[in-house]
Image (cartoon, rainbow, N blue to C red; front, side):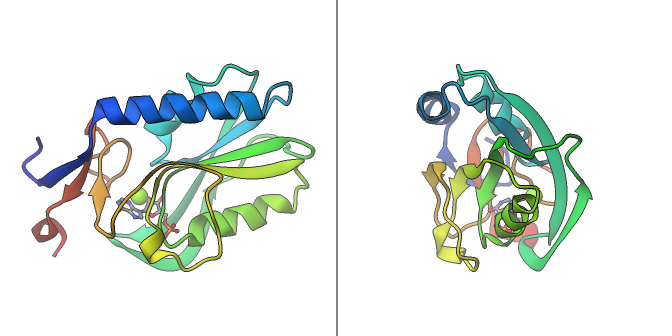
Length: 177
Ligand code: IMP
Ligand code: MG
């Protein structure tokens, strides 16, 4: 275990099993619809790669990059740093995030993409931290609910570090205080 991690919340095996289940569910729900997975960079990258390999229906993918976070607390403002590279009019969008925290980012993105008149927009998130929700938004596909602690690994960072950890762990508070 990494020295900055207080304890492991979810190990690789648990994560693999759950992503397999969510992938199967999405495959059934979108059979014949060719959804487009829209990953929210950078945190989504490991989850999205694992999720898509568990989806059996035809699908495509794209990425958006946003910034809304500075350290461990949301600034409340969302900035689009990279937009989609294709038209999503009439498409079934599945927004893929690492964690749904305040919900400000996904709420903003959902409204932002709605203007382009997709056929539907759903949200798939690896983690859900409902204790800190501010925006009125729920995940359609969520792998795990996590307590109100700052977690890293499996794509999630603290100031760009720890994304490579193959598990989800609680970061020691002294690292960011
Ligand atoms: P929201 O807009 O508050 O829902 O924030 C979503 C973004 O905040 C996520 O995509 C993460 O990048 C970041 N975030 C929120 N909570 C955590 C955490 O516990 N660990 C790492 N990143 C987090
Ligand atoms: Mg982040």
